Image (cartoon, rainbow, N blue to C red; front, side, top):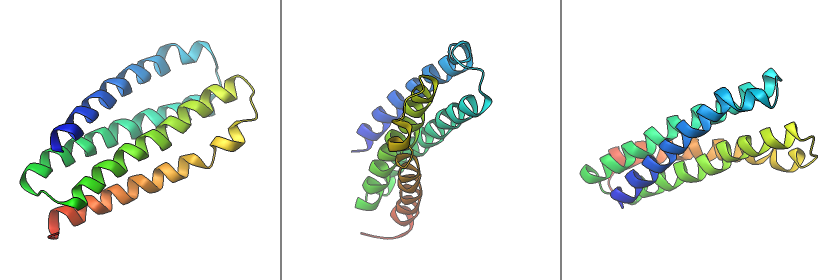
Length: 130
């Protein structure tokens, strides 16, 4: 399990760098709206923060194998997909003037909730036995 989390973290990390580079260069040619650019940057930052958290879970699982760490890893993965993924999608929907923004908007906080749960499972996985 730990190698899978490390592999996924590496892929999400590479993706965060690529998406961040696009945000710093390509996205600015699509919009000058500071709110949209800031939101996109937040999505990239949170993706990278939680890539590092997922990497930590993979490394810690070697020393503290537990179901709670597995739940932590899955929570971080789901959080990245929902939180950062929804921000990326909302960014492009806003640029294109789509009304689908209203549908995706509530997904972002749900991803944030998964981040919080992931951190709590990480804490429990290291300090409590199964």
